[in-house]
Image 1 (cartoon, each protein chain N blue to C red):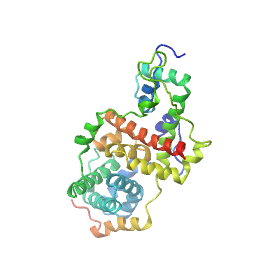
Image 2: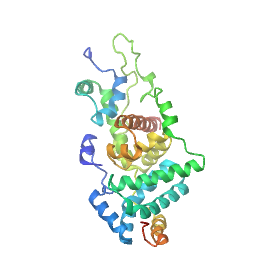
Image 3: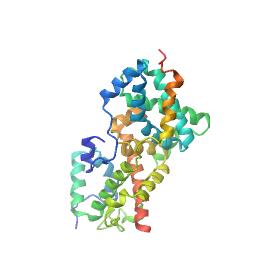
Length: 232
Length: 85
C-alpha cells in the first residue's frame, strides 16, 4: 500500500506486511535473471511468490491447481525474461503471465467463465451495498432513504478484534464467496495493497469499472463481518 | 432535521468507495462530508468499510510455506537457468 493510499484510507500499512518491492530493484533482478543468475530468481520468488500463490488460490479456489499455475508462471518468467520490454512493471508482467496460465488451465478444465460476459451482465443488476429494508422508502415525507436500522458498533475494541485469527479467516472466506472479478480486484487492492492503476492494467479494466467491482466486493465482505459481529 | 440537500443514507453507502478512492466530484464530496457530520449511522458505516479494508490487508499471510518455496525454486534448476532467447 502506498503512503497516499494509506492516508486516504485513514490507516497505516500493516506492520507485518512485506514492503512493496521497488520497481527499480525488480528491473535489476530481471536483468540478472536474463544473464542466468539463480540468485536473482530466488529473490524474485521471495518477493512475489507468496502474493502470486494467494492470488492464484483466490482465482482458482483450488490449492494444487494454484501452485501448479504459479510454478508454470515462473517457468514462463525464466523463458520470457529476455523478451521483457518494460512496458509495464516487472510485477505486472509476472502477474500477467500467471493470469494467462490460470485462464488457460481453468478453460481446459471447463471451469473458466469469462467474467466480461457473465459477471458484467449480472453486474448491471442492482446490488445494493446494504439491504434496502434497512432504509426508509425514497418517497418518505421527512427522511427519504435514511436509516431505519443503522449499523451498530462491532466490538468494544474493533482494532483488536480485527487482528484476531478468526476474523482474518472470516475475511478470507467472505472474499472467496464474492464473484470472481470482484474478488480479483479486492484481493489485489486490499489484500496485496496494489494501487488502482496497476490493477486496471493487469485485469484490463477501466478505473470506473474497477471502483464498481471494488465497491461491491468490500460491501459484501463488510456485510459478512457485520453478521459475524452482530449475531454471535 | 437535515438540510433540504442532505444526502439520503441509502445513497451515501453507495458512494463510500468512490469517496475513499477520491473519485467524487467536489460537489458530491462536499455533500458526502456534510452528511457525515450529521449522521451517526453513516459515520459508523464509513468506519466499518475502513475496518473491512484493514482486515483484508491483515488477512494476508506472510511468506511462502517452506516446501512450496522449494518447489518453486526448483523450477530454475529444471530449466538449467537459461532463458530462451
